[in-house]
Image (cartoon, rainbow, N blue to C red; front, side, top):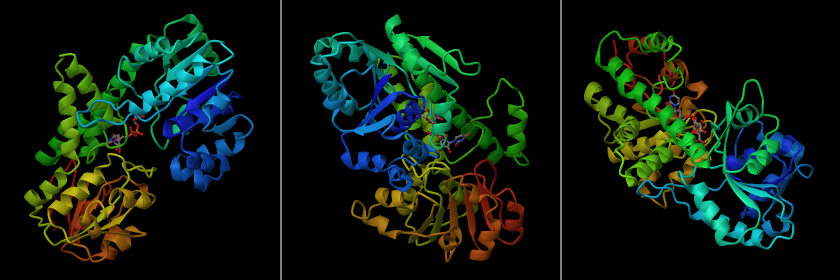
Length: 459
Ligand code: UGA
């Protein structure tokens, strides 16, 4: 099959690369030549600068110029194409709705070219990035508007967690395809022939609207699990003495009807999807006059969770932040990624600065370059108070307290590093429950406060 993947961000690039592994002729199209040149180089360092996914650079190096091509010239590649996957960014507007301007700009360009193509074989335009319910139908109207001959639309949302995108693309839990005609289902089945009739992969064919809805329900349900554990499970552990969070989780999730995923309590879920998708779904339902209480609560709990430990530290541990030096460990929204979009650390920094800290000494194994973009002193002079270090130990030096914001493996059991770097009185604020041996810390005079447990004062 000849496939174009329009948009080479995280979703598009991963999809294009994995499709090329199955022997399709794949053209990854983008307007950003700089980015394309980095991908064309096949070099991990250059590729990772844009999309840092384990295994992705290797697939690109292996398949480029054979099955995988990069182009900014849509006109030059569009003839003879069987399918175009649309993987454009759909960022949130201030009111929560999705900004579809990038999407429709690309759609207009594609439709103009498709209307005058010489080869009028059937072509399907497939929405891969998350778009509001009804977008495939809007796309269909565009095709009519431009008089594009012999074209169909489909919705085929992606379900890739960052850091695991290659693995999950190769072995997805399910492939969801929403289309209107047998012809279009057949084309997509040929693209995904390795997944159709697979014993472990559910291949679901449905309407475009259902496929769009599946993505929103799945993501908001996943965030609901997290918010439930944060808003109920963790709250119980923080309120009543002698509740062991890890045992509580094991006891509850032993029931195989209850998901273990999401039971990891934290200072909030971040990333480019959950926050954006739930806000968009709230907007979509509200616009249709529907109540959105459940979704709104899930969203509110998650936002509250990002910084509530700072309030707890003041209330329960009597912490004062004004003119204090704080170490911030972890900037990325989760481990194994440099992505900081919607990361809890953004809110933590904002709150600490508002509380008047004199310095934030930050460390993240991979996200420092990214952090410098988010915390650019040219945009806000308060960001001058942030300095970056090459290890947790260096970041801790000379500080009054530490906030752990990302679940990097190297932060697990951080107590020894803390003891080596700083002397008590010192407060550990743990947004990820990374220090199971906190008793050792409190016995040596350090205070400890974590999501899911009451404050543990120094002994
Ligand atoms: C999420 C979904 O997991 C994917 O299935 C979906 O396709 C993707 O969004 C998307 O819409 O594109 P992702 O944002 O990469 O993937 O990250 P997750 O691994 O789901 O983690 C999201 C956030 O939740 C992270 O901040 C993570 O630390 C947090 N989390 C996760 C918890 O706080 N507790 C948990 O138990 C699990």
